[in-house]
Length: 196
Image (cartoon, rainbow, N blue to C red; front, side, top):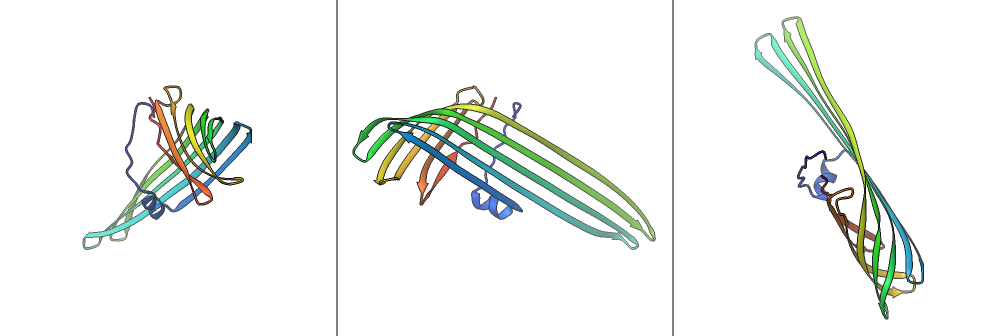
């Protein structure tokens, strides 16, 4: 964002373990008429972290220092996709689709940090505090192109593999997604797009 990039190395288990709030929603819809299908999906997540810490020291008799720190971080992300698929080849239960559409990205972050200091000498006390808060959001729209392999297991039930690429310098420089069903739901793996 704005010429800055940050590498994050955290597994899903790390995020779940360290977050105080973790909410995620996902929905897919597809309508097919012959070889043509219209599709859409939405992914929304909210992750929140809060850390509070108070430390007290007694550096000398009758002197007490206390430092309290509070850190809060809330991140929300939404991805909405609309597009169309066209079945260009079929071999029995196996079908191949080409995909095209657009993917909208929205990210918002709120960060707050506060430090309280207290020095007590005998029956006198001096206190001070500093607070810092920042929030911001960014959104963009990426075109995307992809392909999908579908295998009909039973009428109305399909196993599929999907992959796409997007961005092309329009909204982001490059983004990609690969997904496959797991049980009765899909499990997308999306790369965070690189933005100029």
